[in-house]
Length: 364
Image (tube, rainbow, N blue to C red; front, side):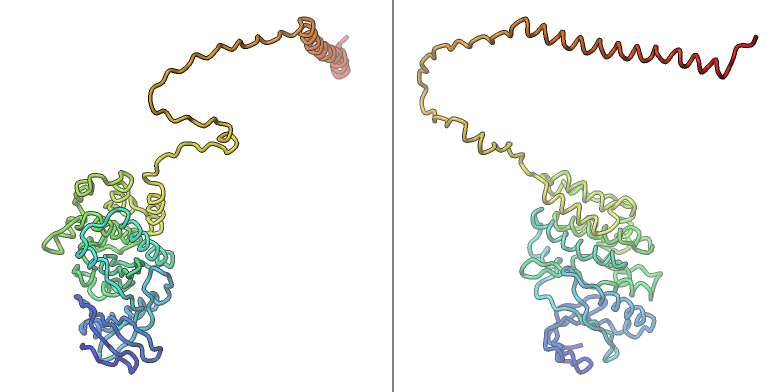
C-alpha cells in the first residue's frame, strides 16, 4: 500500500512511518474531522482470514474503550481494499526502541519515569480486564516532551487465535520480550506483561535485552530456563533496591512477580522518591535557635583567658519537720485505709456464717 491512497473515502494516507512483520503504519489525514491520525494496515494474508477479522474487531473495540494519558487512543477500525486497518491517535515522536538505538543506555533517573508511565497505562488496561500480550519498546511511543504512550493493545492476542500452535514473532509477539509462560504457549496474564516490562527496563539500563539468540526457539528456551546476566555487571553502582526489583519482575514463575503493572508502578514510584535521600540533621526550633549564642569564627589559635570559677550554691535543704510531717500523713492514710478494709472483711464473716447456718442447719 502506498501513500496517497484514500481509505473509506475518509482517511488520506500521507507517508509511511514504519513497517513490520504484520503491518505497515502510515501518517494519515482524517478528512472528516480534519486531523492527523496514525493508521496501521495489516498484511493481506491476515486481513483475508475471517476468524482473525472477527477477533481483530473484538480486540479493537476493547482497546477503543481505553482512555488514559499513557495509552494511544483508538479512534476507528475498518476494512478497505481487502485490508484491515485500525485508526489511532497520532503521536509525533519516536518509539522507545529507536531511542535506545540512538542513545544507548539510559540512566536510572531517565529510565524510571519512562517505565513508570508504561506501568500506568498498562496497569489501567489490567484493571479493565485487558492484557497487552506484546509489551516491547517498539510499542511505546515517546513524544518530544517525554510523554510515553503504549500502543497495539490486543493485536497480538487476536493474532494468536489464528495459528495457536505456531510460536513465531508474528503470532506470539517479539521473542525478545515475551514471558516464559508465553514461550511455553500458555495463555498470558497481567504478570506476563509485568515480565515484559522488566525486560524493557533491563534493556533501558544496560543497552541490551537480558536474552539474545539467533532464533525464536532459542530465545524461548532462554526465557523458560536461563538466568539473565546480573544487571550489576553492566551498572556496578546500580542501587541494590532497583536490582532486587528487576530480579523479581524477571522471575520465571508468574506468582513470584508483581501481579499487575500497577503494583510494579507503585514500587518504582516508591523507589524513585525514597532512594539515596541523605539523612538531614534535625532542624532546630526557631525559638531555640534564637537563644543560641552566635559562634565566633576561629581564624588563628589564641590564648583563652582563664575564667573565674563560679561557686554554685548548694541546694537549700528543706526543714526536717516538714519532711517528717509529709511522711506521717502518707503513713496515716495508708494504715487507715488498710484498717477499714480489714474491718469490712471481718465484719462480713458473721454474716456469711449466718447465711450458711440458715441453708444448712446442724443436724441434731
